[in-house]
Image: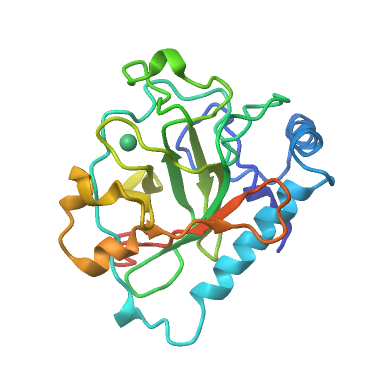
Length: 260
Ligand SMILES: [Fe+2]
């Protein structure tokens, strides 16, 4: 893990959305924010950072296990963007959705780490992919002016985050376990772009959630392997004293490397 890798964990908005620049130095402000997160949410300093490193390392190990050949890769199915991509981006757009800027009050919901890799169709990692996620808060409200449950929206939840992949294609977010809202089973929205070019819009789901069978968007995917590829097995994070979960979602793009 080099410096460039470590700073990707705190990929912050500098007023040039989607420019895809990587910030090679954490600002004092970011360090202060991270320290506040650590004090409030975790017992030991740097626990956020160490958790993220551990989750990302696990992701890299699983992705390179023997037998993960390209012909076994299932392309991640494209799915609707839905109507609730934020109509106004939050003030903080980093990969920690639990806390906005230097707030000392984390959002409601079950703390959940989602990590994975962005891969091309041959299984090679895709570098400099901008991974954007957005999801409803613990009360089923999106960061969108037209969201259902808007009056109940958790203003402490960032609702949206982004992460720029490095050479190993790995990404990571700290967020909450997705919850159902009227008409939908729990899900997290993903959009992948590279150099401003759109590569994929999709969603991931909670494996074995009872709402999955009735979900209209999910029922639109008829290929069994594609369906399995978007199910995330959220499990208790080993050693967590606050009941955190962790899940892995690899994204396999359908484009050739030249296209990307
Ligand atoms: Fe949604």
